[in-house]
Length: 436
Ligand code: CMC
Image (tube, helix red, strand yellow):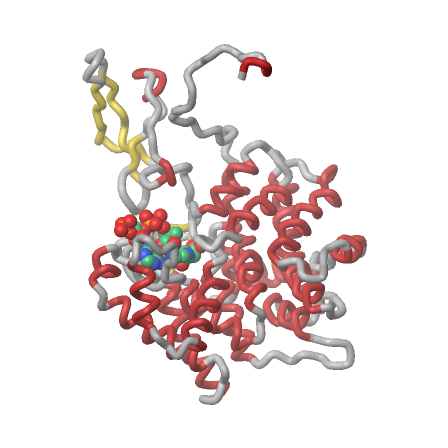
C-alpha cells in the first residue's frame, strides 16, 4: 500500500476540530481512507455494520472487482487459472505468492502427500457423532479437534511452524471431508492413496468401497479440480474474516479454521450451494412454476430468496459462475442426455434467464453467484447435498491459511477488536430481587 497525496478532511461541526486523514492507494480498487487517527483526534468511532465500506486489513492475496466481475489470485485472472492451472498449483500460488516451477510443485505435492494421514484416534472421535449428524457439524468439530494433536508443536510466531500447520491442514482436509461423508453414509472410512494426485485421491476416499475400487473419469477429476480452484480464495468474506479474527488472538490455526468452517456453513455464505439444489429440486418437483419462485423472491413479506443469486461484492456476473456454468454443461453432456441432473440444469438456466430480465433483479444488480451451478456439478459427480459445503470448506482451506499466514507474518499485527455503537441502558442502580 502507498500513501498517495490525497487526503480527506473530517470536521466536527460541534467543536470545529478537524482531522486530515490520508487516503491509502492499493494496486487496484478504490482508495481507502486511513481512519486510525480518527478516535485519537476527534474521539469518534466509525459505524459500518456488515463492513460495507470498511477494509479490515491490507492483503496481497486476492483481488475482486465487483462492478466488472473480475477475480484474480496473486494477480492471475481466475479464467486463466481455471483453464491452465491445477488445484495443487493454485494452492502453491496462494500460499507462496508465485507460481511454482516444476521442481517446486513436485516438492510441494510430495510434502502434502506425506501428511494426508489423520491420527488413527480421530476415527474414534467420529464414532461419537449421531448417525445423522450433518457433515459440516462433523467437519467443524474434527478440524478443531486436530488442535489437540498438535497444540504443543505450533508456534504461531515461527514461519516454519506456521507453514507446517498449513501443510498439515491442506493435506488432511480431504481425508477428514471424506470421513464426514463415510460416517454419515454408514460406510467404512478410506485411507489416502499416495499414488493419486490430491483431487483424484479425494474422490477415491469419497467413493471407493471395500472390494470395489472407484476409478473417477478424467472429466470428473477435472471438474472437481476446477471447482476447488474456483473456491480456493475470495478475499475478506465472512469465513476468511472469521479465521483472521480468531487467529489474531494467536489461537491455534486448527481452532481458527474450525471457526471459519462454522461461518462458511450459513446459507448466506457457503451453505448456499446446498440451498440452491434444494430450491431447484423443489421447483422441478412442483412442475417448474418458475414465476412463483421469482415472485416469492421479490416479495418483501416472504423470507425466501433466490438462492445462488446476489453477492455483497459482485454487482455483475460472478466470474466463477460463468466458468462453472460452462463446465456444468460440458459434464452433463458427457454423462448423456438422460442424466438425472439435466432437468436441474435446464431449470437453473431458465430461472437465470427470467431473473436477469426482471426489473427487480436488474435494479439491484443481482446475478448468479458461484453457488448457482456448482451444486449441479456436485450432484453429477455423486456428491450428496449435505456434503456440498464441506467441499467448499476443503477448497477454501488454502485461502484461509494464506490469509492467516499473511496476517501472522505482519510485524504490526494486533488482535482484531471492533468497537460498537452502544444503544442499551445508561448506567442504573441494581434493584433488589424482592423489589423487581
Ligand atoms: N433474492 C432476492 N432478493 C435478493 C437476493 C436474492 N438472492 N439477494 C439480495 N436481494 C435483495 C435484497 O432483498 C435487497 O433488496 P432491497 O434493497 O429491496 O432491500 C437487495 O437485494 C440487496 O441485498 P442485501 O441483502 O442488502 O445484500 P447483501 O450484500 O447484504 O447480501 C447475499 C448478499 C449474498 C447474502 C444475498 O444476495 C443473498 O442472500 N443471496 C442468496 C444467498 C446466496 O446465494 N449466497 C451465496 C453468496 S456467494 C458464495 C459465497 O461467497 O459465500
